[in-house]
Amino acid sequence: MDSQQLRQTGEDYLIRSSLLSDVVAASGGPVFVRAEGSEVWDRDGNAYLDFNSGQMCSWLGHNNPRVTAAVQKGLSQLTHASSVYYNEPQVLLAKKLAETLDAPLRRTLFIQSGADSNEAAILFARRATGKNAIAALHLSFHGYSDVSRAMSYIAAAPNHGPTIPDLYAIPAPYAYRSPIESESDEWWAPLLDISFQILDRQCAGNLAAVIVEPVISAGGVIELPGGYVRALKERLEERGALLIFDEAQTGLGKLGEMYAYQQLGVMPDIITVSKHFGGGLAISAMVTTDEIEQKALEGGLSFGHSHSSDPIGCTAGLASLEEIMEADVPAKAAAIGTYWQARMRDLQQRFPMIGDVRGRGCLQGIELVRDRNTKEPANTEADEIFRLCLKEGLLFSVRGAHGNVVRFVPPATTTEQQIDQASDILERALSQVS
Ligand SMILES: Cc1ncc(COP(=O)(O)O)c(C=O)c1O
Image 1 (cartoon, rainbow, N blue to C red):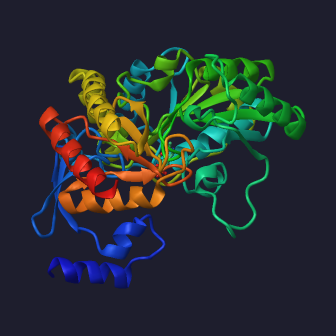
Image 2: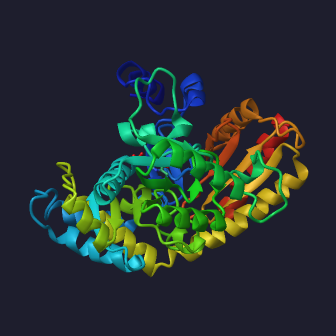
């Protein structure tokens, strides 16, 4: 089959309401056949710089050699095992993961996706506290299973049927579009006050946890201020409620340190990791403390899937953690972020359309506006830039509440030369659209 026939076959046989980008769906995008490091190739032999790291899961670089070798070996040893028993890669991975975290976070449950790690976190928080209400930021994304979707307010869609009871939204601290004008470092304080005034009324002593992405990713690459998160934790402690960090997109080195909670100086009670944890294979984890695990068990916890703790996923996770630690991947992420952001700030000086440049390490965004004073979102322009860059061989995604934040997640294998190449492609697209 040639690429056109493959694309047509996809259109004929695949569910059309998938995550396929509207732009790609309308214009017919590439059909990928292979990848290596920071590049992917389509069926026609065209190369693309993948500044989306696949769906962020290949952030260690596509086909990481260490992960590939470990998985190849593991496939002939133990592909699947019953989660009623321990298996060797599972036990070794639990210990290794604990070594990357700080005490008292050390007890892990392995599952498969970001969504089910967050489902597990909610379940543990509810069973451990004996309370039910969960709050999330109004620009958050936590997955597409029913509970995680219901607390993914950025993905809210009309006619999705009744939402899950006892989930609440609180305003995200979004510095670039804050409704509160303030010069103070603590500009977010009124938002937090209002959040708890409302939560205390709505939940009436029933708040189990608040879940946050330390950098809101799909909601538009919005960095939570450290002071905000530390104050949030205090408010939660006062109420006997837990803080859950969804580090699907921020953990395991991507922001320049092992975890975003370390950068923010806050200890979450529960943390979830997924995305590049398996170096491209599906595995996720929910980690908590001995105390919370004990309370959750006493609270009548029951949870697991057929593929929980699959040895092959755990083998991939083990290899990816070894890679992250031994190759000092967090330092690479920090260097890539600094270099990329310098290029973006330079573009910002020349293109008024770039209203804001933000992000850390390998999670970066530029917010496009039609006017820097009114901040009118340049969303159709963002789609056009996406289309032009795709044609020139640069992949990224367009996100944010207004569809005007261009998000870049370059793999940890990305070189300065590749960054220059990507930035030049982006510059040409900005020139055409401006
Ligand atoms: C912060 C965050 N949490 C959870 C998820 C859901 O992960 P998954 O698609 O593996 O279920 C995503 C996916 O993009 C995410 O960005």
